[in-house]
Amino acid sequence: MTMNRYWRLNSRPEGSDVSGALSLESEPMPELAEGEVLVRAAYLSMDAGTRMWMTEREDGYQPPLALGTKMVGLVLGHVAASRHAGFAEGDLVRGFGQWAENSVMQPELAGLMTVDDSIDDIRQHFGVLGFNGWTALWGIRETAGVKAGDNVLVSAAAGSTGVLACQVAKILGANVYGLAGGPEKCRWLEEELGITRAIDYKKEDIAAALAKVEGGINAYFDNVGGPILDAVLPNMALYGRIALCGLLAQYEGDGRGRGPEQFDQILMKRLRIEGFFSPDFADQGERLTAELKQWLDQGLIDTPFDVTDGMENVLTAYEKLFTGGNIGKVLVKI
Ligand SMILES: NC(=O)c1ccc[n+]([C@@H]2O[C@H](COP(=O)([O-])OP(=O)(O)OC[C@H]3O[C@@H](n4cnc5c(N)ncnc54)[C@H](OP(=O)(O)O)[C@@H]3O)[C@@H](O)[C@H]2O)c1
Image 1 (tube, rainbow, N blue to C red):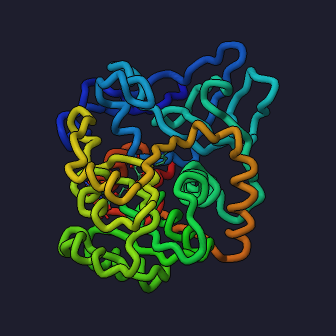
Image 2 (cartoon, protein in one colour):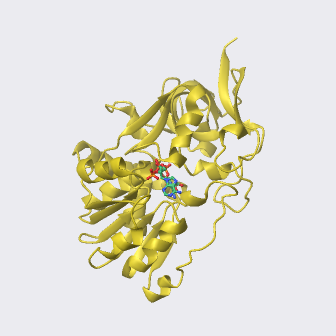
Image 3 (cartoon, helix red, strand yellow):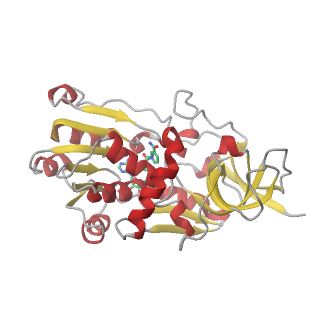
């Protein structure tokens, strides 16, 4: 019998101990109901925001995952079987499936879509042309309203979303500052990505480094929240904008956070802070993808991929998002 391996969420993870909460399981290949599609994974996307789904909080942007069920995540792969008129065997597709070799998806719920299989590197459907690309473009241009000449700061700048946000800001003519952990990431951001200045938040005094930015920070693309946000707030320019993309500093534990302590700076600097969430603009994905594809073809934007092989190594890949082991997009090749 052909078997299907998948990761099951057994308990709510304690702190950073995600591996203690999940187990690798095996089942007979699932049967499809009418309207469902079976997708054979080529790559699984590792996304930091999914850590929140493992908590029990009910007021997040996604309901908590039920214990004893398959871990949910974005999948890029080929249709292995279809009982849905919109999808045929062999189609290259992307959607919210499971951390599994084969995912059962209801296309309307999974946001399943066929993607271009003629591009040079299909991983770009999780890179420049994927949700991280859309998030970077939306957050920088629509939410933060970045214009040429702005000083733009990006946190988790060497991560998947951050690398793309830095490049979108550069394309729009901004001076780009990035926060990242360690000298190697900072060197890469300055020398390879060509941003104006990278700040090693693990070693440097962030507030002191930002105080040297002439005119202050006009737009902050925040992936982490926490103490870093407190270091940034007093260094924002008057009428600055903060696009709140993620709160990585508080995803572990119960996913909740306090603060910011420097809340009064929002009034003193007349700041605007706005959260944004990619599924809200997924209906504009086609337009965003077309724009990003043009930049990709022109060599203006790209991303490194950090690829781990094999279902059994999913948690090793996932951990990188929280320990900072990656530059660019973390993927698991199935
Ligand atoms: N709003 C949306 O629609 C949306 C969509 C996609 C992603 N996101 C958000 O974007 C953020 C990045 O997610 P991603 O999946 O692209 O992961 P990623 O940036 O590829 O990886 C996470 C990176 O964050 C840094 N990091 C981890 N913990 C940190 C901490 N406590 N303080 C500062 N930096 C920390 C690490 O790099 P260092 O070595 O530099 O620490 C790590 O490499 C997350 O907050 C996620 O929720 C939001």
